[in-house]
Amino acid sequence: MQITPGKLSGLKAVANSLGVIAAAAMDQRGSLKKTLGKEKGAEVTDAMMEEFKSAVTEVLTQHASAILLDPEWGLDAAKKRASNAGLLLAYERSGYDNTRPGRRPDLLDVWSVRRLKEVGADCVKLLLYYTPFEQVSINSEKHAFVERIGDECRSNDLPFFLEFVGYDPAGGDEKGFEFAKIKPAVVAGSMKEFTKDRYGVDVMKVEIPVNMKYVDGAASFSRDVVYTRAEAKEHFLAAAEVSTKPFIYLSAGVSNAEFTESLELAAESGVRFAGVLCGRATWKDGISIYAKDGVGPFKRWLETQGVANIKM
Image (cartoon, rainbow, N blue to C red; front, side):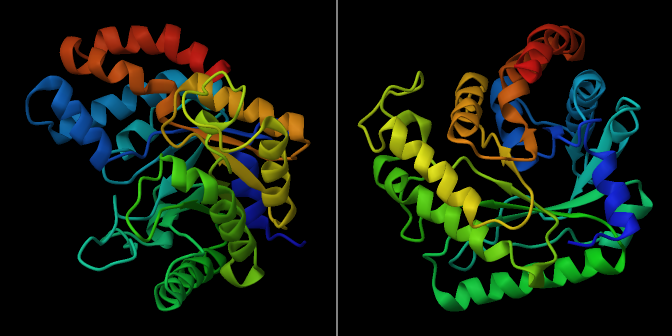
């Protein structure tokens, strides 16, 4: 596969010396603001969002190959990242369109790939809620949407990271037993679709294809069995085998211990993944510290437990 100079430069900027992407994610917006407000018991200001993101960026990028931020509250934080860390910027609006079915995506109003590049992005990231079990008409709309972003990244010679998060079109619980049974097919089906060249995706940011809470014998197992350990490893391999593009795993808000265990299982299965992009698993336990005690104690927590989390 040929790669253009700009895309190659961008990918090198967000990877370590071994070519592995070991990035931290701090592009959470709506969910972060809601959680901070709940912990603080008061309204969360723009200044607080910027301060929180800056603290995470300043501390954790000393131990990461890159940081994923948003251009809404993350641009000041981007200036505080360590010199070794590249910059990915999110292009999508937080959340999804809830006025229509299908969790359709939307882009930030005043941003384009060109503008993200102008403020220093090494790569562009798009989050898409996707399942191969959605209505054909809805998925066709999403396919066209991703094609447009892919073309925009091509014209600006900037790497395109696509993150897809599965869901149940019927409205079921994505953390529940029934969804756990179809999650491998959701992840593998999404990877099979967006690995196609027509989308222009350079790196896929994918979910763990099983829910570790339903893997028999897993340390995080706490519910009914959906997969044996051998079956879970087969699901890892089945998803990886449909991909012709590099992919990295996302933590999807699980605990650091659970995410680490899932990566160990991926490695044990023989999957060759290109790295990880880990967010809440590293810093979410510090939210209450920031909300109640301020940025100083929060940074001290990051320098100890946060760093320990990202090094696991």
